[in-house]
Length: 201
Image 1 (cartoon, rainbow, N blue to C red):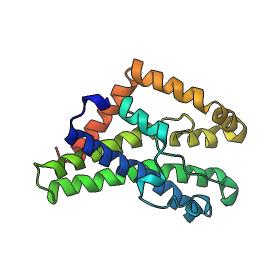
Image 2 (cartoon, helix red, strand yellow; image 1 turned 90 degrees about the vertical axis):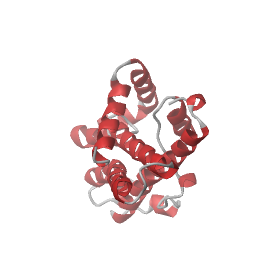
Image 3 (cartoon, one colour; image 1 turned 180 degrees about the vertical axis):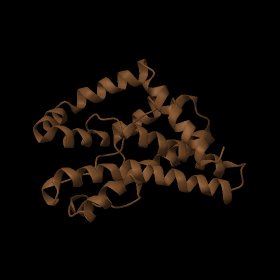
Image 4 (cartoon, rainbow, N blue to C red; image 1 turned 45 degrees about the horizontal axis):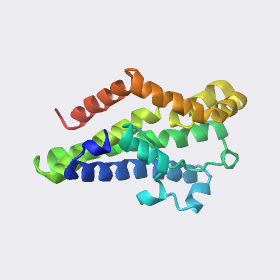
């Protein structure tokens, strides 16, 4: 997914798809956190679908260059929750779940409301793919990705805090694995398979 390999139409579709996928994902985190008692993200204006509130410079660049990336993490204060570990897990789950729901709704739109040919249909299909890729990527159990919250529940606060300290090297290792092992192509393949499912193919 190198930026230099994209024509103007594909670039436009990718930019729209990334904006939708990242905004939905991060806004869902902020919304559920507020719902469960932590208004930190809401007070910072993160309960919004405006992509400018959620884009992370490095994560966005990597999405274009390496084919994966992330949005700016939503701040969460576990002490504001009545059930810190569980509620933090639910907040984390909200991001991937929102991407899955978005993909499902857009799939129905492509099947029933949008002419199959044309720019709009192409943008929607790419948006479905991006949402599914973001969902699958964020379920990987490596900090700071959403899937790492499972480790918090399984191993407790002390182990999870240690893993968070190692978040940057773990992400760099993940980057290497995505580029040098079948992991990246496996995630992309799963996203493509799910895309065809939501398109009724």
